[in-house]
Amino acid sequence: MPDPSTASRRPLLSGNWKMHQNHFEAIQFVQKFAYLIGKDELADVDVSLHPPFTDIRSVQTVLESDKLGYALGAQHCHWEDKGAFTGEVSPAFLEKLGVDYVICGHSERRELFGETDEMVNRKVRAIIAHAMTPILCCGETLDERESGRTEGKVLGQIRAGLAGVTAEQVAAMVIAYEPIWAIGTGRTATSADAQEMCAAIRACVAELYGASTAAGVRIQYGGSVKSGNIAELIDQPDIDGALVGGASLDPDEFAKIVRLGR
Ligand code: PEP
Image (cartoon, rainbow, N blue to C red; front, side, top):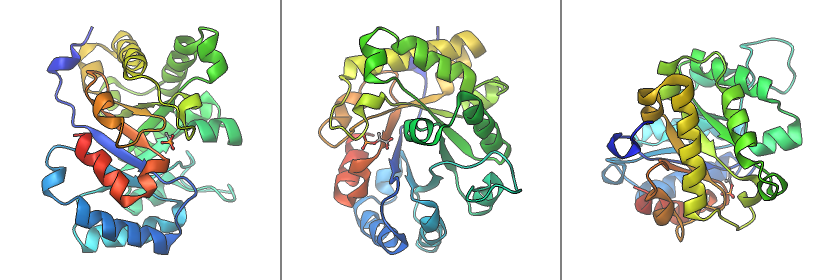
C-alpha cells in the first residue's frame, strides 16, 4: 500500500465551466480572477481553467499575454487526430493551443452523450500521446451507492480507463472521483465518504501499478465543492484537489476555493 502522507502531491483545483460563459465572459472572468489569485497564491497549488471550446483560444491569449500561471484545460476531446468526425475536437489541435489538462469521462459525457469506458480509455491514451494530462472522471449514481455497488462501479471505470497506460504515465495523471448524485445538486459527499473512495482508488492503482505510481497520481474530489467545504475535503490524505463546476463560474468564489484548497 502506498503511504499517501509521505507523497508530495501538489493540489490541483480545476474549474469546469461546462457550457457556460461565452468568450467575452471568459476573458472577463480571467481578468477578474487574476486580481484575486496571483503568482504568490500559486506557489503551492495548481489551478486549471476548462472553458468551452469556443473560448479556449481567447483564454489562452490572455493567459499568455498577461503571463498568468493558470493551466489551460479542455472539457473533452476525440481520440483521433483528424478525420470525418463532424463536431468533434482533435487532441492534436488542443495540444497546439497549449492545453495542459483535458477532462475525460465526465459523468455528463457518459450519461448524456453515451461515452463508454472503451471510448474514455481511447481518449486517455490520445491525450497522453499529445503530451497533455488527462483528468479521468469516475463516479457512481445514487442508486449504485444505495445498493452497495459504489466500489464495483468506480474501480471498474478506473481499470477500464487506464488500460494500456504505463505506470509512469499513470503517476503523472489526475483522477477525479465525482459521485454523480453530488454533481450540481448541492449535495456533497461527506469528507469521510470522499476520502474512503479516493483511498480505494489509490489502492486500486497500487494493485495495478505498484506503490510509487499510486503515491504519485493526483486524485481530485468533485461534486458541489464550494468555499464552505473545500478545506475539510483537502485535509483528507487521499484528496489532492477538486474538480469544481458551478462554483468555478464566479471568480470570487473560485478564488476562495483556491485559497482554502492549498
Ligand atoms: C463538475 O462539473 O464536475 C462538478 C463537480 O460540478 P459541481 O461542482 O457543480 O457539482
